[in-house]
Image (cartoon, rainbow, N blue to C red; front, side):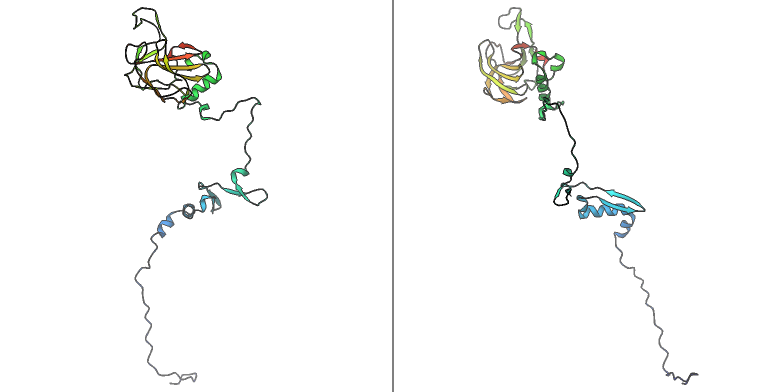
Length: 273
């Protein structure tokens, strides 16, 4: 065929219109995409820092809407920084100036655990009392509770002071300590930390006897024992077993005779227990 412009167009069948394929199936979606969208940018960055570990040694800065947020993740190792010259890395704690602590020239500074006085550290309380002054100058109000019980359970059989003698039956007998009920073989405990100064027979009625020196004139004695668990010169701690109770010496039955001595003189043990 000849068109108006003189160009010949071939007589061919009309082309079949192209069919556009419509995809009806949905594209697979990331199951975590919606969860990430619901989380804000601040949380996403902190989770990324925690997962990758970069937040363990540094903070993460986030600029969002003109606001800078800083997230600090606790470090598991010392944070390192460079020194003033920028050469070798040093601990960040060494870069910051340390506070200065001053004290008098003759001041005594003690950082030992026993110097910290708390209810959980009765030996610290006793040490402070004895270091501040002689045991003879300590008031009853201050000394009460500074010594531990010499037995697991205390039941008084005969108190300190004047009484009728259980041996002679005469009145006016001065009882030098506190008698506590104890079956023979009961564990006898050190009332506080100290040094054992005597283990043996007491010729004035105490029978088998242990003496512990706690310093500054304070001593405790344990009498009528059946056997010993310590030796002279040994250091014992509060609650250590020093002996087993018995009925040796001037005794009418199994019990513990407990004494507290201040500068060589006996005092009422209840003022220290």
